[in-house]
Image 1 (cartoon, one colour):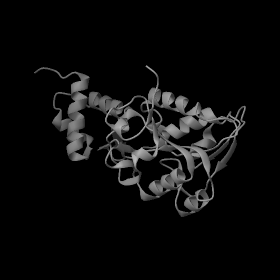
Image 2 (tube, helix red, strand yellow):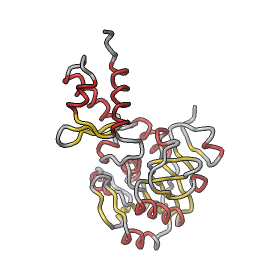
Image 3 (spheres, rainbow, N blue to C red):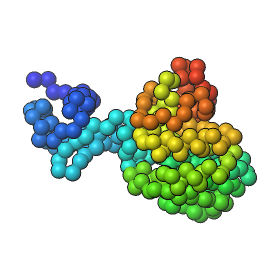
Length: 251
């Protein structure tokens, strides 16, 4: 029998998980009778690094769609180069003295690390700010309180919403789980969607931080239309560009 190369094997494994959504490792082994258990475990670890699956307690593996919420520690490692480019583009938009908002999410976490040295005021609901190096700190940082989500390192809810309604921003940088021309900017839960909507309405300029893996993805709740923000991404999409402006690297 012809042996599958790792890519073929992992694609077959993903197809199985898409169909089952959650499956025990023992059951996976039965679907791959010619593949050792150690090889399958390596494949699962590789897919975990890509954010496509998650190992669960008890020996099960869960399929993750692009709009599922991953722990921020894992999300920050996915498409890291693209996110670094996106955050660098965003930093150049901020001027000394600006009043800005940085959202929760992995893109926001990376951006915070590059902004805290500027002479600006940063409002954020991203608790990863507490893990940033504060050496040479110049920014005033104000964390808007609320209900803490330890998975996403995010604060949201009614307390957060009331606080944000009293603040106005020169620029806001919003994280998303999906962007689609018909369904707009989407996120997994209503409290995050409401938070993003309030920030957008209180911002002179609104930017969405979004690597291209989020294009044509739709999460559970719409925050606002894509035409209401500039998309900062690693590359442009011609169809999406008919609905909104893009900021991408030159070349």
